[in-house]
Length: 541
Image (cartoon, rainbow, N blue to C red; front, side, top):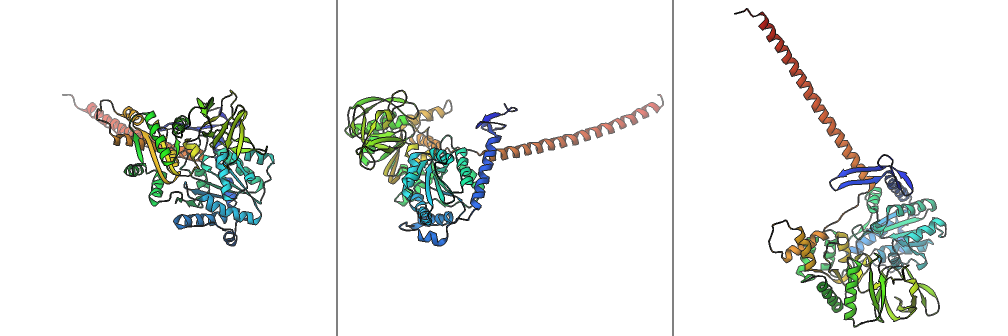
């Protein structure tokens, strides 16, 4: 395989591999080639400043956008830097930094005043639709895959008077982003990308922001001060989670009594989370769909909803469960869904992660209340998989990934099954959804099992709450970053260079020793010869 290569994206390509302290790492020549093309296209687009906004245009388009405080200063600086940059710009913004409502809205106003058409896209539909908040028309907002497909087929008319805003870029794969850049090179539109590499990343996402840092260097504006949290204390805690200061953040939340490990196991933790969610009117996110479903059932009971029609249901991961549905239930969609509205119009009602309230359960579907307040009918065939299972779940608790982009006054990061499935990226998302207060609620039993499994044999010291929280801190501190193929190749080349230099040094040392040994041997031989001659001419006794 190493000699013959592998098929990558439909092409035969060579493998590049190296042994590391974490095992064998592998990439392909095609992956390296794609990354180099990406960097080159970004640099060329950035250098094209022919359509950069002027100071006057930026000032005239501010409208009702306000820049207040330290966050406002960073937002305003980012707006000007992006507006006056080339045909490609990148903005890195912390969770709740106001990039959509301030910077992107200001720039959208400016481009619209010029007569440009502005498009919005993101990896998922629910993320893309958030871009309506910056003034992009709903018809111009698309999930990334269908946007790329339609742009490549010519169904979308993009040109030099078009601007494409790409949000949540850290969740975009290298090849998808390269497709967008190739379209930009072909049609000449501008691209503004935004995101935060310290929030959730999809499994297929590449280290795109690292590649863009290599392409653009210091020409990347950042908004790192959050405006979502209302108090300085909560802003500081959110910053700690973003910067990986997990031990300090957990310590502060334990002092505030907003971090809790519930005595008992999974069920006890679920009950406590449900009690708190109802009492505080808090939103909830959990690591897995199974945990979110269990919490949703418990909250449903506390909201006074009992019984209902039971359906076989399935989530995105393929896990199946019984789902009782009744009027008043809040349910979460798992795909982009259309419904029939009262005027007979068939229209879009939600995406993967959208939560809707059920008004009535019918034989042929469910009537739900749309986010606009209108009642619409979703027919069962639109939300059933090929095996006839309903693709719904209770919506009072979401997974952490589905909650990215959510904002609420109070929020709970729920860990009833333990913290083992949460790393630093997901912890930051879970602890930055709130405006007023957030909680992290886990299970003593789940953390105890993991902590005991990590103890050396023979250690019998009693495990305390501090030990359990230390286990949580260890899990939430993990941040496995993906290395770019370009950086991997560079590191392998440097390693090979050092290995070659080390080998050459060893060979020189061996050669020197061999010469020394030969010299000593030669001198020894001459001495032996002289001794032999003396012995030969010595008179006999």
